[in-house]
Image (cartoon, rainbow, N blue to C red):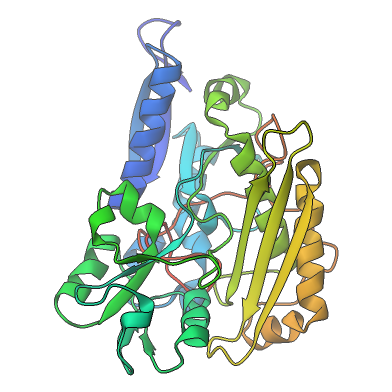
Length: 363
């Protein structure tokens, strides 16, 4: 963190990718920080990630979702930036030494969205209709409900994907509702897919703020943006995916929701899924726990999926050997300190993150 003309007016440097959605997220955090700290200057430092440059290939083939965060993380390590904003669902399982995701912001709608010019819902699509997505997670769940549909690979930022749809190359495409809402494109959504139809990726709709672990001045400035209920949910979801050794090569879904939030001992409900891309096998789990046991709920969900055969599916798809003890439990925030700092990231403006997709909140 640098100082401006007066020591009372510090300047924060915020690293962000250049995609429209990444810039929206960065500006949102910028505005929230200034509202919390009048006089604070927040400078955006736009960077281009490798993931943004390789839009013609699935992430699984070019290095995974970490491609969207490495440049931002290096800027933090080099002290060219003080904070970086990421879409939580695109955060890799482990962060470089010295960095942490200290804040989890309030979540936008976590659901997937169907976008179509001619059809109002997934069930309205005619047999053999072509659906575009880069996400194996979405693919397997779509095909489970509608095995008569065709699914074709689609990457790129939100506007690129919408242009492909509008050109008639697809009958429908699937994106994260959060990305469309944030970009002011809510009216393009034909159907918000119920989570019983398409369970979201872990962390979908949530944003995380990454910084250096030893920068106490920065930690104090960003702490007011931490949203505890979202952090509990993200912690459970990411503990599950980390214990499964989830990567962008495999279809894994996870969504936690806080229930009885107004009680003195709130609880959360976590649902998880692992599937074959062709929907020949879909494994599901459901766990409930007090919020203080969010990580344990995630580990229990992973163990239940593994007991059903998830390990074999993940290994066959190149997801690696699941971590039986859950590793360090992911990031996601563990309470008032904003998280235990073991992961955090962003995406490509049109993907998914924990399944075979391209990154960011639009997938």
